[in-house]
Figure 1 (cartoon, rainbow, N blue to C red):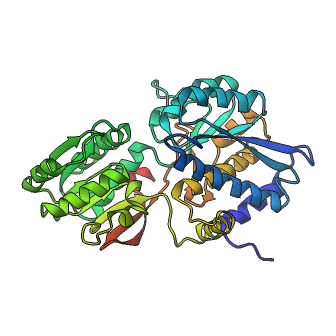
Figure 2 (figure 1 turned 135 degrees about the vertical axis):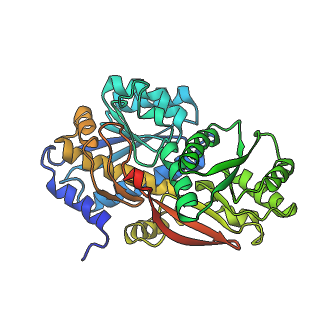
Length: 384
Protein backbone atom coordinates (compact mmCIF):
# COMPACT_ATOMS: atom_id res chain seq x y z
CA UNK A 1 0.00 0.00 0.00
CA UNK A 2 1.46 3.31 -1.09
CA UNK A 3 1.73 5.92 1.68
CA UNK A 4 0.25 9.24 0.66
CA UNK A 5 1.68 12.54 1.77
CA UNK A 6 5.11 13.62 2.89
CA UNK A 7 3.98 14.12 6.48
CA UNK A 8 2.96 10.52 7.17
CA UNK A 9 5.87 9.18 5.15
CA UNK A 10 8.28 11.18 7.28
CA UNK A 11 6.73 9.80 10.48
CA UNK A 12 7.20 6.26 9.22
CA UNK A 13 10.79 7.05 8.23
CA UNK A 14 11.44 8.23 11.77
CA UNK A 15 10.16 4.95 13.19
CA UNK A 16 12.55 3.05 10.96
CA UNK A 17 15.54 5.34 11.50
CA UNK A 18 15.58 5.46 15.29
CA UNK A 19 17.68 2.85 17.07
CA UNK A 20 18.38 4.47 20.44
CA UNK A 21 15.36 3.11 22.30
CA UNK A 22 14.86 -0.30 23.86
CA UNK A 23 12.78 -2.55 21.59
CA UNK A 24 9.17 -3.19 22.56
CA UNK A 25 9.35 -0.20 24.89
CA UNK A 26 7.17 2.83 25.37
CA UNK A 27 7.63 6.55 24.89
CA UNK A 28 5.42 8.61 27.20
CA UNK A 29 4.34 12.04 25.99
CA UNK A 30 2.45 14.37 28.31
CA UNK A 31 -0.42 16.52 27.08
CA UNK A 32 -1.23 19.59 29.18
CA UNK A 33 -4.56 21.03 28.01
CA UNK A 34 -7.73 22.74 29.18
CA UNK A 35 -10.45 20.13 28.69
CA UNK A 36 -13.22 21.65 30.81
CA UNK A 37 -12.46 25.34 31.38
CA UNK A 38 -12.81 28.59 29.42
CA UNK A 39 -10.44 27.53 26.59
CA UNK A 40 -11.60 23.91 26.43
CA UNK A 41 -12.60 24.17 22.75
CA UNK A 42 -8.95 24.80 21.96
CA UNK A 43 -7.59 22.25 24.42
CA UNK A 44 -9.85 19.47 23.22
CA UNK A 45 -8.91 20.19 19.61
CA UNK A 46 -5.17 19.97 20.41
CA UNK A 47 -5.81 16.71 22.28
CA UNK A 48 -7.76 15.10 19.45
CA UNK A 49 -5.11 16.05 16.91
CA UNK A 50 -2.40 14.57 19.14
CA UNK A 51 -4.44 11.41 19.75
CA UNK A 52 -4.85 10.95 16.01
CA UNK A 53 -1.10 11.30 15.42
CA UNK A 54 -0.28 8.78 18.16
CA UNK A 55 -2.89 6.32 16.90
CA UNK A 56 -1.58 6.46 13.33
CA UNK A 57 2.07 6.13 14.35
CA UNK A 58 1.32 3.18 16.64
CA UNK A 59 -0.79 1.51 13.94
CA UNK A 60 2.21 1.73 11.61
CA UNK A 61 4.44 -0.11 14.10
CA UNK A 62 5.25 2.70 16.48
CA UNK A 63 8.60 4.42 16.70
CA UNK A 64 10.85 1.48 15.66
CA UNK A 65 8.65 -0.89 17.56
CA UNK A 66 8.19 1.34 20.58
CA UNK A 67 4.64 2.45 21.23
CA UNK A 68 3.81 6.07 21.94
CA UNK A 69 1.59 6.64 24.98
CA UNK A 70 -0.13 10.01 25.34
CA UNK A 71 -1.10 11.00 28.87
CA UNK A 72 -3.52 13.94 28.97
CA UNK A 73 -4.20 16.05 32.07
CA UNK A 74 -6.89 18.73 32.35
CA UNK A 75 -5.63 22.15 33.46
CA UNK A 76 -9.21 23.49 33.63
CA UNK A 77 -7.72 26.68 32.21
CA UNK A 78 -6.18 27.44 35.59
CA UNK A 79 -2.51 28.28 36.10
CA UNK A 80 -2.17 26.51 39.46
CA UNK A 81 -3.89 23.41 38.10
CA UNK A 82 -1.49 23.50 35.15
CA UNK A 83 1.57 23.65 37.42
CA UNK A 84 0.33 20.63 39.40
CA UNK A 85 -0.56 18.78 36.21
CA UNK A 86 2.84 19.39 34.64
CA UNK A 87 4.61 18.12 37.76
CA UNK A 88 2.43 15.02 37.75
CA UNK A 89 3.15 14.31 34.09
CA UNK A 90 6.91 14.51 34.59
CA UNK A 91 7.36 13.04 38.07
CA UNK A 92 4.68 10.36 38.14
CA UNK A 93 3.82 9.56 34.52
CA UNK A 94 7.48 9.89 33.44
CA UNK A 95 6.67 11.97 30.38
CA UNK A 96 9.82 12.72 28.38
CA UNK A 97 8.23 15.72 26.62
CA UNK A 98 4.97 17.60 27.03
CA UNK A 99 2.56 19.03 24.49
CA UNK A 100 1.81 22.52 25.75
CA UNK A 101 -1.44 24.46 25.49
CA UNK A 102 -2.32 27.35 23.14
CA UNK A 103 -2.47 29.62 26.19
CA UNK A 104 0.46 31.92 26.96
CA UNK A 105 -0.16 32.55 30.66
CA UNK A 106 0.12 28.83 31.37
CA UNK A 107 3.24 28.63 29.23
CA UNK A 108 4.82 31.42 31.25
CA UNK A 109 3.89 29.70 34.53
CA UNK A 110 5.34 26.29 33.71
CA UNK A 111 8.51 27.50 31.97
CA UNK A 112 10.65 27.72 35.16
CA UNK A 113 9.56 24.21 36.22
CA UNK A 114 10.20 22.75 32.78
CA UNK A 115 13.65 24.35 32.76
CA UNK A 116 14.42 22.93 36.20
CA UNK A 117 13.26 19.42 35.29
CA UNK A 118 14.88 19.57 31.83
CA UNK A 119 11.71 18.39 30.11
CA UNK A 120 10.65 20.13 26.91
CA UNK A 121 7.27 21.73 26.32
CA UNK A 122 6.22 22.02 22.68
CA UNK A 123 3.36 24.50 22.57
CA UNK A 124 1.35 26.96 20.53
CA UNK A 125 1.51 29.85 23.03
CA UNK A 126 2.23 32.97 20.97
CA UNK A 127 3.56 35.36 23.61
CA UNK A 128 7.30 35.62 22.77
CA UNK A 129 8.17 35.73 26.50
CA UNK A 130 7.27 32.05 26.79
CA UNK A 131 10.17 31.07 24.56
CA UNK A 132 12.64 33.95 25.02
CA UNK A 133 13.84 35.31 28.37
CA UNK A 134 14.26 38.99 29.22
CA UNK A 135 18.02 38.71 28.64
CA UNK A 136 17.41 37.57 25.07
CA UNK A 137 18.38 33.94 25.71
CA UNK A 138 15.90 31.19 24.85
CA UNK A 139 13.85 29.56 27.57
CA UNK A 140 15.81 26.27 27.69
CA UNK A 141 12.84 23.89 27.65
CA UNK A 142 10.12 25.89 25.87
CA UNK A 143 9.46 25.54 22.12
CA UNK A 144 6.84 27.03 19.78
CA UNK A 145 5.56 25.56 16.51
CA UNK A 146 3.45 28.45 15.25
CA UNK A 147 4.34 32.11 14.69
CA UNK A 148 4.60 34.34 17.75
CA UNK A 149 2.25 37.30 18.09
CA UNK A 150 5.04 39.50 16.68
CA UNK A 151 5.64 37.25 13.66
CA UNK A 152 1.91 36.84 13.16
CA UNK A 153 1.15 40.57 13.26
CA UNK A 154 4.04 41.28 10.88
CA UNK A 155 2.78 38.70 8.38
CA UNK A 156 -0.65 40.36 8.34
CA UNK A 157 0.86 43.86 8.14
CA UNK A 158 3.24 42.90 5.33
CA UNK A 159 0.50 41.31 3.28
CA UNK A 160 -1.86 44.26 3.73
CA UNK A 161 0.81 46.83 2.92
CA UNK A 162 3.03 45.13 0.35
CA UNK A 163 0.62 42.80 -1.44
CA UNK A 164 -2.69 44.63 -1.16
CA UNK A 165 -1.15 48.10 -1.33
CA UNK A 166 -2.91 49.66 1.65
CA UNK A 167 -1.17 52.73 3.11
CA UNK A 168 -3.61 54.35 5.55
CA UNK A 169 -4.71 52.05 8.36
CA UNK A 170 -7.35 52.30 11.06
CA UNK A 171 -7.30 49.99 14.09
CA UNK A 172 -10.12 48.83 16.36
CA UNK A 173 -9.16 46.55 19.22
CA UNK A 174 -10.14 45.34 22.69
CA UNK A 175 -7.74 47.10 25.05
CA UNK A 176 -8.63 44.65 27.84
CA UNK A 177 -7.58 41.65 25.76
CA UNK A 178 -3.89 40.68 26.07
CA UNK A 179 -3.96 38.89 22.72
CA UNK A 180 -5.35 41.92 20.86
CA UNK A 181 -2.85 44.23 22.55
CA UNK A 182 0.06 41.91 21.70
CA UNK A 183 -0.99 41.99 18.04
CA UNK A 184 -1.15 45.80 17.90
CA UNK A 185 2.37 47.08 18.62
CA UNK A 186 4.27 44.94 16.06
CA UNK A 187 1.61 45.62 13.44
CA UNK A 188 1.89 49.38 13.88
CA UNK A 189 5.68 49.26 13.95
CA UNK A 190 5.83 47.29 10.71
CA UNK A 191 3.36 49.53 8.88
CA UNK A 192 5.18 52.70 9.96
CA UNK A 193 8.57 51.22 9.03
CA UNK A 194 7.23 50.58 5.52
CA UNK A 195 5.94 54.14 5.13
CA UNK A 196 2.30 53.54 6.01
CA UNK A 197 0.34 55.50 8.59
CA UNK A 198 -2.15 54.75 11.33
CA UNK A 199 -4.86 57.35 10.78
CA UNK A 200 -7.22 56.14 13.53
CA UNK A 201 -6.80 53.97 16.62
CA UNK A 202 -10.00 53.14 18.47
CA UNK A 203 -10.50 50.88 21.48
CA UNK A 204 -13.19 49.13 23.48
CA UNK A 205 -13.27 46.76 26.44
CA UNK A 206 -14.60 43.25 26.93
CA UNK A 207 -17.96 44.39 28.30
CA UNK A 208 -18.68 46.72 25.37
CA UNK A 209 -21.14 45.53 22.73
CA UNK A 210 -21.64 48.71 20.73
CA UNK A 211 -18.70 49.92 18.63
CA UNK A 212 -20.62 52.30 16.37
CA UNK A 213 -19.15 55.47 17.89
CA UNK A 214 -15.62 54.14 17.27
CA UNK A 215 -16.54 52.95 13.77
CA UNK A 216 -17.97 56.36 12.88
CA UNK A 217 -14.68 57.99 13.89
CA UNK A 218 -12.85 55.49 11.71
CA UNK A 219 -15.23 56.25 8.86
CA UNK A 220 -14.31 59.94 9.08
CA UNK A 221 -10.55 59.31 9.28
CA UNK A 222 -9.96 58.47 5.64
CA UNK A 223 -8.47 55.02 6.15
CA UNK A 224 -7.90 52.53 3.33
CA UNK A 225 -8.41 49.49 5.54
CA UNK A 226 -9.39 48.49 9.09
CA UNK A 227 -7.21 46.17 11.20
CA UNK A 228 -9.23 44.18 13.77
CA UNK A 229 -7.07 41.72 15.78
CA UNK A 230 -9.96 40.61 17.99
CA UNK A 231 -11.87 37.52 19.12
CA UNK A 232 -14.53 36.00 16.86
CA UNK A 233 -17.60 37.29 18.71
CA UNK A 234 -16.19 40.82 18.64
CA UNK A 235 -15.55 40.52 14.91
CA UNK A 236 -19.15 39.46 14.36
CA UNK A 237 -20.35 42.60 16.14
CA UNK A 238 -17.84 44.76 14.25
CA UNK A 239 -18.85 43.74 10.73
CA UNK A 240 -22.57 43.94 11.48
CA UNK A 241 -22.29 47.42 12.97
CA UNK A 242 -19.92 48.56 10.19
CA UNK A 243 -22.64 47.65 7.70
CA UNK A 244 -25.25 49.52 9.75
CA UNK A 245 -23.30 52.80 9.58
CA UNK A 246 -22.26 52.36 5.95
CA UNK A 247 -18.57 51.75 6.64
CA UNK A 248 -17.43 49.82 3.59
CA UNK A 249 -13.75 49.49 4.38
CA UNK A 250 -11.95 46.22 3.72
CA UNK A 251 -10.71 44.59 6.92
CA UNK A 252 -7.65 42.54 7.88
CA UNK A 253 -7.65 40.17 10.83
CA UNK A 254 -6.21 36.99 12.29
CA UNK A 255 -7.30 33.44 13.02
CA UNK A 256 -10.57 34.55 14.60
CA UNK A 257 -11.95 35.35 11.14
CA UNK A 258 -11.54 31.69 10.17
CA UNK A 259 -14.60 29.41 10.11
CA UNK A 260 -17.12 29.53 11.68
CA UNK A 261 -16.88 33.35 11.73
CA UNK A 262 -18.72 34.01 8.45
CA UNK A 263 -21.55 31.64 9.30
CA UNK A 264 -21.92 33.32 12.71
CA UNK A 265 -22.33 36.68 10.99
CA UNK A 266 -25.12 35.19 8.90
CA UNK A 267 -25.10 38.10 6.44
CA UNK A 268 -22.97 37.79 3.28
CA UNK A 269 -23.03 41.56 2.77
CA UNK A 270 -21.47 42.10 6.21
CA UNK A 271 -18.97 39.21 6.06
CA UNK A 272 -17.31 40.57 2.96
CA UNK A 273 -13.95 41.93 1.79
CA UNK A 274 -12.11 40.56 4.83
CA UNK A 275 -8.54 39.22 4.67
CA UNK A 276 -7.00 37.03 7.36
CA UNK A 277 -4.04 34.75 8.01
CA UNK A 278 -4.62 31.11 8.91
CA UNK A 279 -2.27 28.33 10.09
CA UNK A 280 -3.11 25.93 7.30
CA UNK A 281 -4.28 25.40 3.74
CA UNK A 282 -7.35 23.27 3.10
CA UNK A 283 -5.95 22.18 -0.25
CA UNK A 284 -2.46 20.93 0.64
CA UNK A 285 -2.11 17.12 0.44
CA UNK A 286 -0.38 16.58 3.80
CA UNK A 287 -3.29 18.33 5.53
CA UNK A 288 -6.02 16.71 3.43
CA UNK A 289 -4.95 13.23 4.50
CA UNK A 290 -4.91 14.14 8.19
CA UNK A 291 -8.23 15.97 7.91
CA UNK A 292 -9.91 12.92 6.38
CA UNK A 293 -8.52 10.66 9.10
CA UNK A 294 -9.69 13.14 11.76
CA UNK A 295 -13.21 13.24 10.30
CA UNK A 296 -13.35 9.45 10.24
CA UNK A 297 -12.23 9.18 13.87
CA UNK A 298 -14.13 12.05 15.50
CA UNK A 299 -17.02 12.64 13.06
CA UNK A 300 -16.33 16.39 12.91
CA UNK A 301 -14.16 18.83 10.99
CA UNK A 302 -10.88 19.75 12.72
CA UNK A 303 -10.14 23.35 13.67
CA UNK A 304 -6.63 24.75 13.35
CA UNK A 305 -5.59 23.76 16.90
CA UNK A 306 -6.19 20.10 16.03
CA UNK A 307 -3.54 20.29 13.31
CA UNK A 308 -1.16 21.93 15.76
CA UNK A 309 -1.73 19.04 18.18
CA UNK A 310 -0.85 16.61 15.42
CA UNK A 311 2.29 18.54 14.51
CA UNK A 312 3.47 18.71 18.11
CA UNK A 313 3.65 14.92 18.27
CA UNK A 314 5.52 14.52 14.99
CA UNK A 315 7.92 17.35 15.87
CA UNK A 316 8.81 15.72 19.21
CA UNK A 317 9.50 12.41 17.47
CA UNK A 318 11.77 14.16 14.99
CA UNK A 319 13.57 15.74 17.96
CA UNK A 320 14.13 12.29 19.49
CA UNK A 321 15.87 11.26 16.30
CA UNK A 322 17.95 14.44 16.07
CA UNK A 323 18.86 14.45 19.76
CA UNK A 324 19.96 10.83 19.83
CA UNK A 325 17.52 9.57 22.44
CA UNK A 326 14.30 9.97 24.37
CA UNK A 327 15.47 11.53 27.61
CA UNK A 328 14.39 15.05 28.50
CA UNK A 329 17.76 16.70 27.75
CA UNK A 330 18.17 14.73 24.50
CA UNK A 331 14.78 15.87 23.24
CA UNK A 332 15.58 19.48 24.15
CA UNK A 333 18.80 19.21 22.15
CA UNK A 334 16.93 17.64 19.25
CA UNK A 335 14.22 20.30 19.17
CA UNK A 336 16.86 22.99 18.73
CA UNK A 337 17.98 21.11 15.59
CA UNK A 338 14.55 20.68 13.98
CA UNK A 339 14.79 21.88 10.39
CA UNK A 340 12.50 21.56 7.38
CA UNK A 341 10.07 19.16 9.03
CA UNK A 342 6.89 18.86 6.99
CA UNK A 343 3.92 19.47 9.26
CA UNK A 344 0.24 19.79 8.46
CA UNK A 345 0.52 23.54 9.01
CA UNK A 346 3.71 24.10 7.02
CA UNK A 347 7.42 23.35 7.02
CA UNK A 348 8.75 23.63 10.56
CA UNK A 349 12.25 24.89 11.40
CA UNK A 350 12.99 25.89 15.01
CA UNK A 351 15.61 28.52 15.78
CA UNK A 352 18.18 27.43 18.40
CA UNK A 353 18.44 31.10 19.40
CA UNK A 354 14.73 31.71 20.09
CA UNK A 355 13.08 28.27 20.08
CA UNK A 356 10.54 29.84 17.74
CA UNK A 357 9.75 28.88 14.13
CA UNK A 358 11.82 30.40 11.34
CA UNK A 359 10.30 31.19 7.96
CA UNK A 360 6.99 29.55 8.83
CA UNK A 361 4.48 30.92 6.37
CA UNK A 362 0.79 31.43 7.01
CA UNK A 363 -2.03 30.95 4.54
CA UNK A 364 -3.94 34.03 3.46
CA UNK A 365 -7.69 33.87 2.91
CA UNK A 366 -10.30 36.35 1.74
CA UNK A 367 -13.96 36.31 2.73
CA UNK A 368 -16.13 37.38 -0.20
CA UNK A 369 -19.87 37.63 0.41
CA UNK A 370 -19.69 35.11 3.26
CA UNK A 371 -17.55 32.62 1.30
CA UNK A 372 -13.94 31.70 2.07
CA UNK A 373 -11.41 31.96 -0.73
CA UNK A 374 -7.87 30.66 -0.22
CA UNK A 375 -5.24 33.00 -1.67
CA UNK A 376 -2.03 31.12 -0.82
CA UNK A 377 0.89 30.90 1.58
CA UNK A 378 2.71 34.08 2.53
CA UNK A 379 5.74 35.03 4.58
CA UNK A 380 7.53 38.42 4.53
CA UNK A 381 11.06 38.55 3.15
CA UNK A 382 12.31 39.62 6.60
CA UNK A 383 11.07 36.32 8.10
CA UNK A 384 12.88 34.04 5.66
